[in-house]
Image (cartoon, rainbow, N blue to C red; front, side):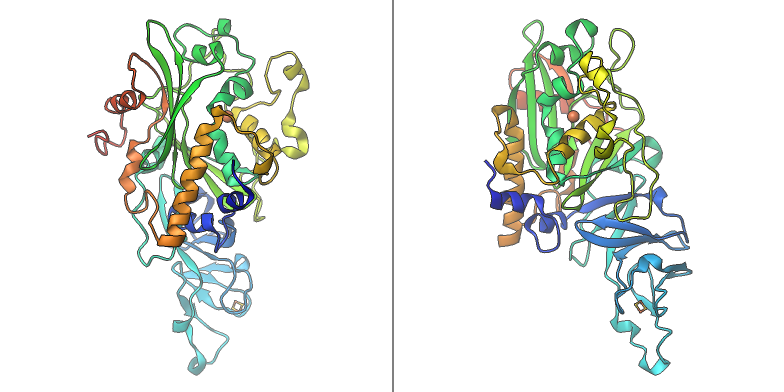
Length: 437
Ligand code: FES
Ligand SMILES: [Fe+2]
């Protein structure tokens, strides 16, 4: 059970909140690099319930700062992106990407106090085609997390952003709730639709898996399992990693280089960021040569706008009931009637309300990964608040290399032994290191 006090601690992310404190320890993927052109328009960016602007100066450097000018709080969104920095259009004060004040042209030279004024700028880095922001208060930002997909060059990745209109935690929990796959996404697929060499057959042949769950150095991990042929077991390994990362199990373990972030924009809006290695193997089609019904390949978006919530909004949304096709639902063509796997998850997690009322839930044994992950998050966030204990992954960024998800059929009996064994044989596109050693 998650009581109301815990629920608030888990879900709220603004300055001064428990979870907001935890999140501010980490590098946050905030925008696509391609969203900012050198010398181009500033971008409104919501992150952890703070209104920021991002801009790329003429040299290509990205600045991310509180949108309010430190003079009289006019929004720097309306600023002029000039040589060397952004100039507030109210009285002309100018700031570079680090927040240094370069010019106070409305004051006579003897009254100039630019050395004493700083825009509230955050540290920024660009990796994997993404702009990352560190919102914590360390003078030196922590090292970049060794999340394997985030270490790849942009050209090797498929990068997807999609906004979700609900709290980050319920959005993330959709990724660690494996038993929904056989219903929400594959409820209309029957065993006879699946060829014998497709591991989907285990999921649609048995929609009630058993679970193992454990804490890990990087967060939590589960393994859902079902009996397979010849005394073997079909395993699905997946992870939560601090503070909002998931690695989901749908696909071959060997080359499954992907990572998914659920980045809170505020308490009721979340930016999903997915990094996928282009060469990762894909789930094979069904016997008819088609993917799972409703699994269309490309998400359709509304055009981006300059609104605080105007970025990466799917075209299917609550206002149009996610374009549900009741006929397809009735005829079992698409179990939900909603097209696109991500939108099926989106519809369901948004339908829970902006922030789930946890007192209304009845969690089952199939939810033990969710329960454990909430507890792990809560304990880490409180330990940081009460005893200044640095949470996992901040000062030990290498731990994420141990998190690999996917499915496999193995003879092993011990699930954690099976996991470690599989990890020794994975494909590592980074060539970064042998994680298992
Ligand atoms: S409010 Fe920005 S320069 Fe005055
Ligand atoms: Fe899902």
